[in-house]
Length: 364
Image (tube, rainbow, N blue to C red; front, side, top):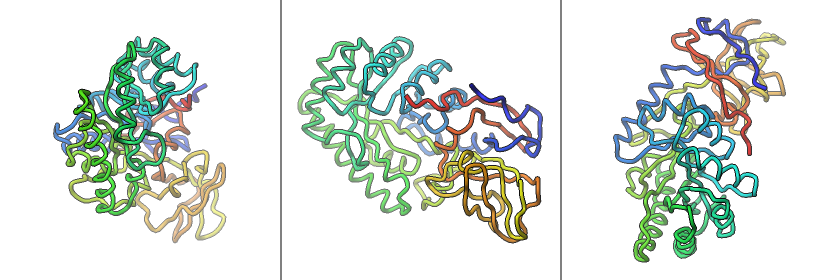
């Protein structure tokens, strides 16, 4: 059951109950525009909705030029389609009769794609009666899912061509580990190696009479390298709309544009245990720390040093007073979003809207 919103439209930000997930609409809209200007029509954008889990945001990304969105779970895809999004790629492998049956049912309501890296999985999807675009996921350095480039991928493509109801959508080539490599030059080198695998596989397919409609992939930390390589037709950035503490630690320079922090956890000081410390009401249940602790926005002298379930510890000179509100930049935006039911959308410090996080907890 969703919790009631922690704010009402027209409130000032400092009146919002905490902890709350706050979206700065001006920064969010600048990020949408920054991506559109950076890409400038060179490739298609399929924004990654696993970051935000929100049809409200997905529709705004499509209005800004995205052809559709991608996500990682059938349940996320269901929430997006229910919210009016009609072109969704599940950029992940979907295994098991229950999930595949839901995928097949959803394929009757929207244009749907899915990734495969295994012949048995492909046969199970084909047997479900689904009408899908099927993408072969290549292993290009992520070290997670994906089939080897070249001949193994060719064998799978031939089987897709035989499968009733399925269309060969193209190649999924996402190098997730490259996204948070701090050095620009190292990130570029990772993507260059991935591009070699993509180009070789696409050329092999062509020699055997199989055309590759789309190569899709790329993330917020590398997407312009994929664009410049010419090997990708479509990119899948997700975190660009929010930016988080971990991405902020990357080296950013042309051709990659710099995005603004737009997502914050609003917290209240609930205790002042010492002259140099404050405790806020936002701990592990309010902000993911897998990629580092949150940072205190606008108060660089203060450090968020540790967290327990319901408490965050702030240390530094002149810490905030009891009851004072702080904006925290989460270390990792995606799992932080999954902790909340609502975006409190703020413009110029006033609550302008409330968007439900419809796919919160959508894990299946």
